[in-house]
Image (cartoon, rainbow, N blue to C red; front, side, top):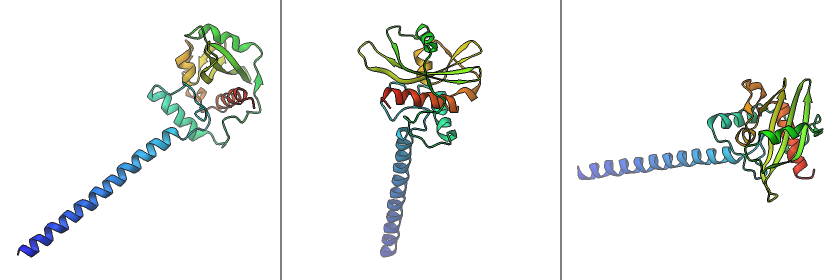
Length: 187
């Protein structure tokens, strides 16, 4: 009987070891997917190909980024310009009045005009010349200024547009974002 119980005990230990390995592999896979999913960018409605301080700070911002990744049909590099982009015609100057930090300056400002809507993208630059944010996006709609990107939301007083179709998943928001990144890279 001792041989049989010893064999049973070894079999149970072997099964537990196999289960432990399976659980460890599943855990490692989940960690791998979460790391690759959070660092693998970017559609692009955001510009994580280049270092910025613009990081989603809320669940809503994260879901906005995920939605942008899932709904952007074109597979483009972040510096590929949108065909409707145009240099700023002075419209972006209004942004300086809504920035939390008045020491920041605007650079690389770009616009996309779509009917009565104007999508404004710009880099925010610190006094030392470094980027606070490589690209933030706002929407000028019916005389109201809305923050679109998470960086615009965190760096300015402009409120987020309540209509979710005007988020970073929008073609024009993503397009002006890419144009600002391209401008900042000299492309």
